[in-house]
Image (cartoon, rainbow, N blue to C red; front, top):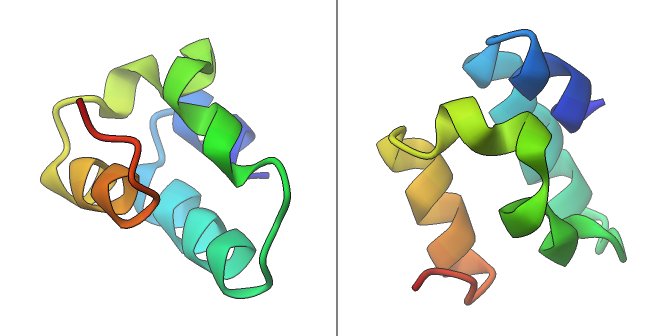
Length: 58
């Protein structure tokens, strides 16, 4: 769901789903860094903070 919202430019909803996935220990969460659906969110500080939380920041 997060990737669909991210692709549609709905960052708030995408981040809410990412947070939920993180809290329930979703196994595919680490794959978001390379997912082109999230390309529009790269400049969002909340997205960058989420990547840091997963230890995926550059």
